[in-house]
Length: 105
Image 1 (tube, rainbow, N blue to C red):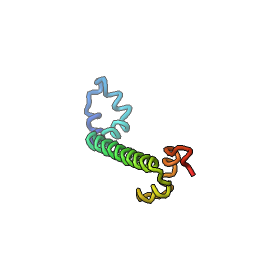
Image 2: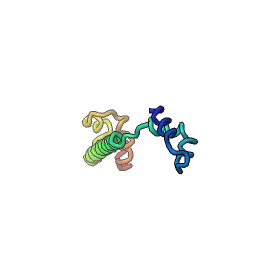
Image 3: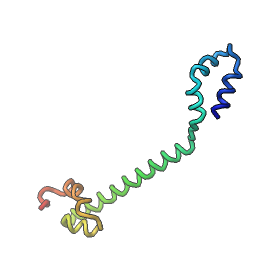
Image 4: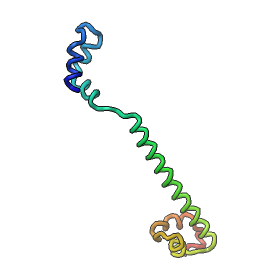
């Protein structure tokens, strides 16, 4: 591919407006040609990243709702963690945030 770029630049008329630029920036032109930007793959990657972020936010929201409901029923941090099958450490901050001060032991 690099040889093809060299040939294309060398075969270009010297009086061409773009010739002096391409000749002066030959290595950058080669790199641009060799570094293929795949828009479809990039968009697919970004879409998958966004989808995973959305799923994670959804899981966090469901956990938040479940903890909130269990606090309203007067359940302790340890009981909530056990019922939701998560560690106490996973929900401690959420519990402290959602639990009214008069219920915190």
